[in-house]
Image (tube, rainbow, N blue to C red; front, side, top):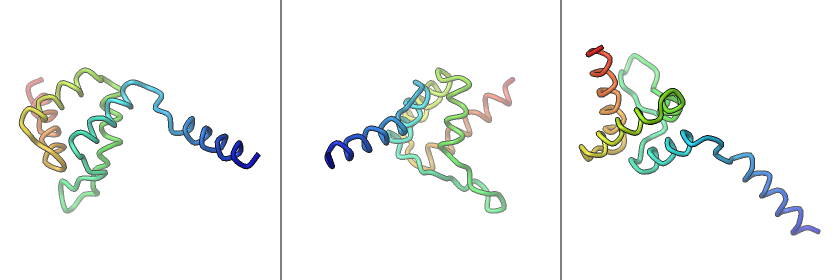
Length: 98
């Protein structure tokens, strides 16, 4: 009975941590692939940015655009903090053009 309880507990944890949407899975793959940090400090006067929360929000709104932007980041060979800052630069340039 003890093993059954442990298996049941593991199954509940697995269900709890399950990725429910394609965009969540895509963001987690990008974070892992580019070794993105959890937080990035862009300005000493401001709080650090929560990388995962920002990417999840952007992916939920428009996953193909997020994937296209990160394809550009990957093409430039960026990783870690540098990759996320480059991504923010792409967004800034796109917003200036509009």
